[in-house]
Image 1 (tube, helix red, strand yellow):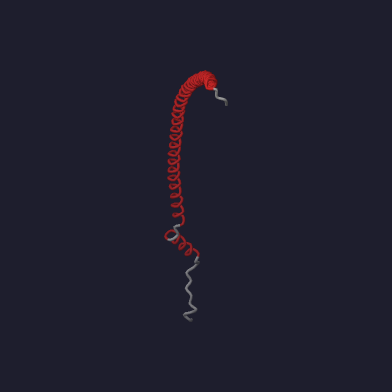
Image 2: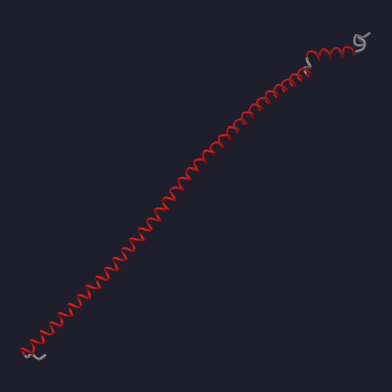
Length: 158
C-alpha cells in the first residue's frame, strides 16, 4: 500500500463542522452582542436626546411666554404714556386755541384802532389842508388887493 492511498477516516465531518461553528460563534462572532449593545446605545441616546429636546423646548416656551408678558407690559405702559401725552396735547391745544382767539380779538382791536387813527389822521390832514388852502387863498387875496392898491396908487400898468 502506498502511503498516499492510506486514508484516515474519522467518521462523519458534520459534527465536527457543527462544533467548530459553535466555537466560532461563541468566540469570534459577536454580531448578536454588538446588535444588542447598539440597540441599547440607540435607546439611551434617543432618550437623552429626547430629554434634551424636551428641556430645550420647555426653555424656549418659557422664554416665549416671558417675551409675551414683557411685550404686553410694554404695550400697557406705552398706552398709558400715550394717553398722558394725548391728554397733555389736548390741554396744550385748548390753551393755544384760547390764546389764538384772544390774540385775534386783540389784533382786531388793534386793526380797528389803527383804522380809527388813520381816519382821524385823514380828517385832521384834510382839516389842515383846508385850513392851509383857506389861509393861502386869504393871503393871495390880500396880496392881490394890496398889489392892486399899490398899482392904483403908483399907477402901474401891467
